[in-house]
Image (cartoon, rainbow, N blue to C red; front, side, top):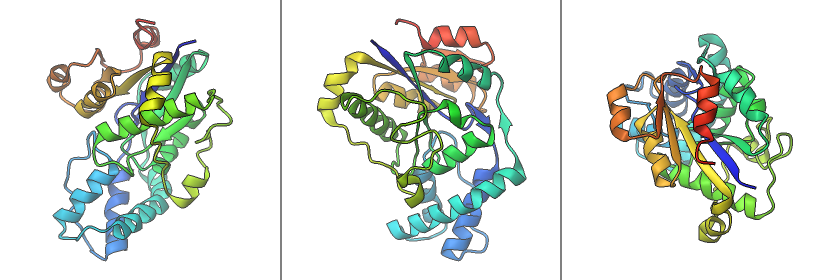
Length: 265
């Protein structure tokens, strides 16, 4: 039976919040000792690892993995209280769409976000969306979103080859988001390799749903279809140039979006 794996971006696609930028600014200040770090960089479509790397360069901080880990860990400590303080906005049609998709046995819902994996889970939990997703692949390991997408795809295919059956209560990165890798703050590498792709690729179809050009490009990098939405503030002309398979204003037309996600199957 063919399984459709839907890789949902979070920020600008499912929800929006300003808490992340504030948390990162404070995390750098606390971890590195810079009172007012310059955090005026573009966050759109990027991974947190890439953003932190640019912030280090912008603030004349020499890169080291230990400094990155210190910033990440402080960020994850700060984020829950800051999203409560600053709030967030659930974008139109999101819960209705996820509820509809979750009823389909041939569909797997996975979040693929530039956020650190745990902060991705925290954002989903804020709106009670975590129950819809089987896994979250975050941007703590990858500088480029294409690499994040390849890692997510290979990990999912590897799990499929290992008789992975989607279970919304028991997965390698379970619904609560509190696996051993969450506790340590690390993300699984998910290095599946070519054999995993060749054995399972004919049984799984991937679709990336996001709001940026980077989402569309990473879909092409893994041979997936892409659905773009205009809820993240990216110029519509830029998204058209990136050539996604379909563009929606938002996710509020549940029937049309579900039909598009399952097209060609």
